[in-house]
Length: 90
Image (cartoon, rainbow, N blue to C red; front, side):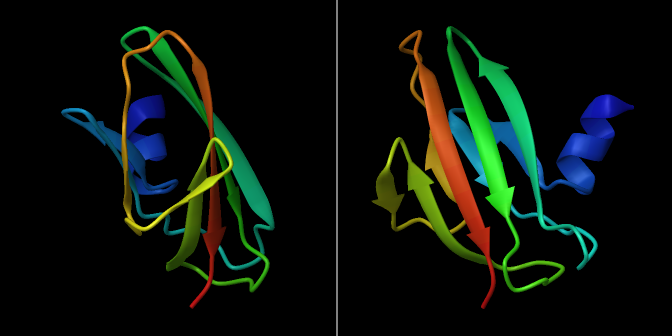
């Protein structure tokens, strides 16, 4: 049940070597955080909702570097903790 909630409501799931991000959350949620393990790496994902929207990814940064892929992150099996920040909005 936890995986279903994470994948459908929070919109965070792993497919092959990609972290797919497409949240569909209540507008009043200011943010949420989830941590996922993938092989030897961990991904700490912080989703911020400053515009109080239900969905729509405006920006993703991975370890402080902006990603130009709006709904996915290439995952690395490197044993490290990676910080992913997602900003919702239009």
